[in-house]
Image (tube, rainbow, N blue to C red; front, top):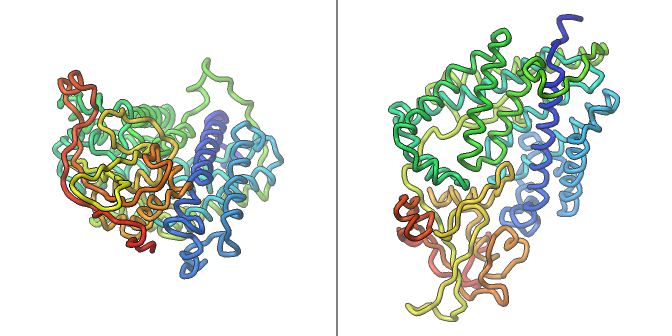
Length: 477
């Protein structure tokens, strides 16, 4: 059985599972808090409406059996509870079949949510969590030997995540090739963080170093994951440091944290010597478990054909799943760099007629830029889905065509569930008579401007995004 066991990875395996459970916990809490206004029965993109035309074969989900908002909440809270039990270590102490069942249930529950989540769940890190979560089912419990094959499959996932992202950058935008993309990225990324202003104001030579370092980490270092130790561990450590840099500079939901927990699984126990206690090695590997690991390994190898073909394609896809189960996907980010930042600012007025003297008051979102004097906040790994889709809407109205009119109608109704997604509602006493949306060009203040005004942003009006509308005029669907 020596061929089956990976000796010296007990702590890395444990930390990977604990970290993945934390990410599951955040993901399910995000679903609990946001699903009703976004995709509940009366949401912006209602799940019942989606299920009328969505087949189980294409979108496998438990919600094909039954859907109600209460049922969704029960499933999401079940995910929260199971993830929390796993975080505190209880799942790992269960008998092997029960442990595997908990991990499998987490995967099925989250798959069910993602496959009915529509555009709100159209992000690469959803598939990344599902793919890693499926492999976690076969990592065993505290009494099981670390399965070498599954640990290697986690490295293969990390390789595709990093190498795919590196390739899409080099193929997609010339600024990655001339090392100038970081001149723009910290300012134009979907949701800047509290330190993004400072990263943006670094000398341009350091931005070029950042870009060059990114290429090394994503295009060269991943091959080290399959080298003998300590090279593989050093490669993983480099990735962890790079991902922590990205965590500090922006808000990318749990994408960076997923890369970190995957990289932790590569670190051998001796890397933690003197820092963390290392669990005792276990040699248990029941025959049925060994057979399951072999079957899953064969499945992943077969499904890897499509991601491999994509990596070598001149028309490389970014963040694509080749099967409805989100297994063995392709990943990538920022194949095209946005040079200018635009934001959609939504306002309302209590005036019964819109005139030049009408007073308009702004709605404020939790994460996306609005008030120029408000410093960006840190939300990752929590995912503010509406804020992210507003960033896409500012790039092109087509991203918001399916839901923006319904969103305007909810604001005109003062819908409580929708307003919970926002930071500030200027019409708490009574709903507005009209709402409108204006497109603005945003940029970070210079150091001099920031010292003089305290503002973090400067903005200039670009044009109309949505003309003033009242409730009777808005098409809800």
